[in-house]
Every structure is written in structure tokens, then in C-alpha cells.
Length: 631
Image (cartoon, rainbow, N blue to C red; front, top):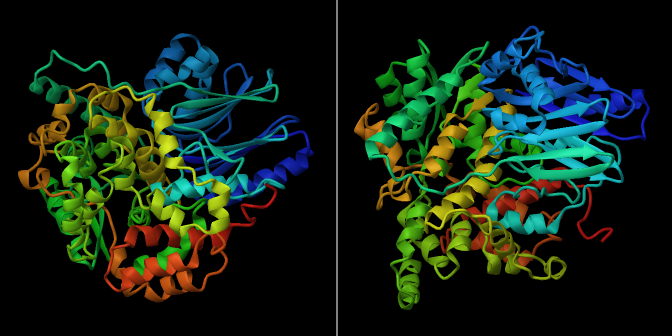
């Protein structure tokens, strides 16, 4: 696992290029504290920070291809690299290392762009063709590993994290108001956008080719949900999935450094633990807990660890522990990110890194198998007649406000609030924070004028749903989550939280063979009636106790609603009532009302308040330029 970075420019001497690379590498040190390497010629400079996982001694990057014409920097892991290497060796390719990095660059020499189809893993890499003076950059199928880039005035810059690009001289950091608008709803900024104009994310399953100062971006991978399988019995699906998950976990045990697994006690992480225990003698598992019982999962994790006889490590955190970590996390955020589970994921990664360098995670299963309650909500909404919407809305509005985790009143109010919207758009609002009307109210007059009061979320969803290749009602939401929520929220969270602590996190459920197979299983076997992840639970029934399989979904949250009223009250009052640095974006009266309604228990505004809180604190730490300058 690494951090990669580089640039292509004619403006600097090689000494200046080296100095710039040094700055970029220094700010990405956390992604690879074990080693560094760089390549510089008159046309290109690129470097990497290395977290040594495979071939610790000889795997230094950059690495040349057999013909010495191609050179690569690579972030990620290729789990089938040994198989590919054997195939290349039969063709006469020689290898100096035992790394997957060297396999990629030689596979590219052998097959060009088609090399991507053979890679099973998580990756973003940059290959420079010295003779042609071309840069080729690719990102994995589902966006597990990040890649940012900027191309302005014939200067091209790339980096594993946005902060690497900010180290390049004279990069303009002007906030993109469209990105801010999308963030307030989606709680993250969807690729290819970033919070800044002229800096972008390479999307999942895409590659980038820079040739003769012309940038070309193409999609090399798309997930197909059609045609559905028809011939297999449910036992056939179970048998095939059992094999695929087992093999995926086995491949992800490849490591020359200590390895473990996150364990929450839910079905996803428990299944990973089961398969891992089949391939590793004594599994190290890790969980954290919280003093608030409605958010604590640690007892479930302990029971699972006992069941599999793992070497389990547990730590309980107080509100003070989480709150004290917040300034450090915001300081390391490249752009606003409002999923509050980033905090416990960060603390879990920090705790895990004390014992191991690699950890397996159950992330991705909800998006692949259909685990979120919003999918059932979409199914349920089809049965509610329009004439009853207002009656039901009035009823749920009278429910008392609760600060606990995912309570009935929270789900009912969220469900009813967006019931009148298009099903695809409704799904995004169910998961997110602000709807269109709320954003218009909270934005200041100048920002509303600049945004022309467009519905950017609706435009985004419409433009992408053209490519949706399933006509199954609720499965369209699954498709949306694979495109947006998985890439821009879940995987971003896991990558940043783990790499802030120099920990490699692997996600076996996102082996593309599993994802592709499950996509084509009939949708009725993924979310059967009101039973989420039905086919995965059938697989688990052969390996896990029923109390784990049928355990109510809890989520990896923190008690934000309570904190705002207690531990964080002073901080929130200062941010919302006195922080003028970002009030230029917002209507101060609307900010005050959001906070006061929450503090007085009139409304549960936890999501909206947290989303704004993160942006305003990020802005105070990072922003250097007003969005309306140089328009």
C-alpha cells in the first residue's frame, strides 16, 4: 500500500522538480512510512511513499518493465499477481522482485490497456512510457483506491490524496459551489468532482491517458446487472458464493507482514472472520466499543471472537476520546466528508495498527448483497397511496424526538419526508442530509444567486441513471449505491481512516468475481420480502450461529445527536453562532434555527448540523480562496 504522486511540466529544473516531489511525498508520509522512491527526467517527475507489505526488502518503487521503457508507481494490491507472473514468465519475461508492482508494469508492456481486465485487486497506478512521453493512470473497478488529478495550462499533476496536489506551486484552490451543494445533500463530494475547481477524482473503473498534452479519460469497466441467471437453484447460488467468498478471503491473506481483521459481530465481518480462520492459524481480530450502549457493538464482536477462538483485541472509547480525535481528523481531511462513522473507523484503525499492518474488512457487503433499509423502504413506498402521504406525514411529525441510534421516529420521519420525490432521487435523500428546499434556505443570498437555484443533485442522478442497466425497482437503488455511496462515502472513509494510521484495509466482498456474480442473481434472492442480504444469510447459515445472522442491523455510528446537546454544545454554538469565516456561504438565521431546534428537542437535526459543522471547520482549516473570486 502506498501513496503515489507526480507531475508533468516544462516549467521547472530537475532540482526544482525534486524539491516539489519531496514536498508531495512528505505530506503523504502516512500512506507509506517505510520507504520512498522517485523518477525524474526532463518531461516527468513521479514518486511514491511505500507501506511495505509484499517483498519488503526488494520491492522498492518505481519499478521498470523488462524493456526498460516503462516505469510504474503503484498504490494497492493485486491478489492474483502470482498467476499472472507465471503466465508472463512463460512468454520470457524476467522478474527482479517478488512484487505485484513489477507484474503490472510487465503486463502493461505485454497487453497495453487490456492488462486491466486481468487484475484482481484494489489499485491506482501511474505508468510512464519514456519513449512515447505518455502517462497512463488507472483506477480499480469499484474505486477502492483513490486518485486525484489536475490539468491546467499544460501542467498535469496527480496524487493519491488531494493534499498532494496542493503542494504543487501556484495551484489555485477555489471552492466549487456545485460541489458544496452536492456535499450538503450527499455528505461527500461525488467523483469526478472535488471541493475545488480544476481538481478532480478519477472515477471508479476509469483510466486516464496523457498524450501530447491532451488528456483522455475512458471507462474501462462497468458492472452489469443483466441478464439475470435463471437456471440455478438457490442451493447452486449458495455453493458458488461460498466458494467465491472463501477464495477471495484466501487471496487477501497474501502478506509478508502481520495481518488481522475488523470484527463488529455483524454478519459481514463475522463471515470474513470465519473464512479467514480457515486460512490462518490464529486470527487476530479487532473491535472497539463506546460507553453509549445504543451505539456499542463490542459485546457482539466478543461473542463472535469466542465462537471462532480468535486472538481478540478490544478497546472501549469515551465521548472525550472521540471528540479529542476530531481536530486531527478534520486537519487531515482533504475535503469535507460528513459521514460521522469516519471517527470510529479512524479509532479502530489506529487501535488495529498497534498489532498488525493489514486488516480485512466486511465493507461492501451491503452495497453488493442489498443490506441497507433504504432498499426495503423503496419496496414499501410502492404500496403507499399518494392520498395518504399527508396524513402519514402529520402522524410521524408528532412522534417524540429521540437521540438514540437509528430509532423508529428517525426512520419514519426520514421515510415520509421524501416520499413524494422520484424513487431514484428519493433514495439519495434518504441517505443524505439536506434536501433541495433546505439548501436554498440555509445558503446565503449571494451563493443562491451564484448557483442559479439549480437542483444539482437531481441533474446528477438523472444523468447517471441513463446508464443504469437494471429495471428491477429497488435494485436501481443498489446500482446507485455502487456508483455513489460505495465509491464516494464508504470506500473513501475506509481508505482515509486506515491510511491516516498507515494501515492497509482489504475488502474481500469487493472481489469483482463476487460482485459480478451477485449482480446477476435474481433481485428477489438479495432482498427477499423484508429480509435483507437474503442470499448472503443463506450462505452464512452454514457457518455462523443464528443470533449473528439475524442480528438487527446497527451501523457503525456515534451519538452525534446527544453530543450536540452535551459534550459538543459549546463547540457547536461557537461554530454556528460566532464563526464568521464560513458564514459568507450561509444564512446566519437559518444556521441558528437549525441548532436551536435541535437543542430544544423540537427536531432531530443531527445530520444537517454535522454536515455543516464539518464543512465550516474544514473551511476554517483549509480554505484559502473565496469561491466568488475570479469568476
